[in-house]
Image (cartoon, rainbow, N blue to C red; front, side):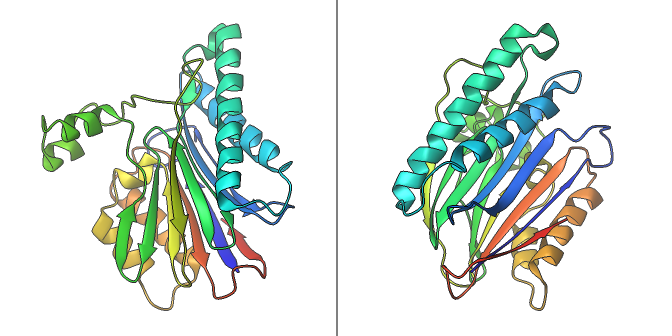
Length: 257
């Protein structure tokens, strides 16, 4: 069984939540989780992220049961590329949506085995026995500067352009999707989040929250959200949490907050 929960909040500063999130079990039995962080003026970011989530979910809803994790990953990639095409076309055809786009991070699981796909700076983390591993590599200006050793980790956290992404869904006719395999053992958790969480909540805080004894999964998600709000809440905040239980194939339990 895989337990799932998601929470999303507009934050303390912005008037519109441009994040979109979906977590659940498809009719085919696969578990799917998506977080998308939209960008663009006049609420276009909200439209871009919602289009992406809706198209990916709809496309994967038509995938037959019984595929391997690798095959599901290919279907996820195709769905993301379809979403990219649709968002790009809408942005091209309607002046009010010009240059809109969205990040996306998504995971699809066949039992314990899954594939993570992402574009942009929304992240996936794997938590196991007190250890937190970031599975995704940010497509962002700050991350490029970090990798080229032009700025330090400390400078990255306060860099004025830390929200600038170098790759997004819908801003170009073609886009590259990064893919990673992951396997979840009983007790493992997968965290997907927008940068409204990762820019304000430290890995140490994530570890303490995910590793806290006696908390339901929805309480852990709510606590992560509250930590981001307490740190300023300058951005929309979205969190999707998946927890692997003992029996990977018996079903899915969901909380939607």
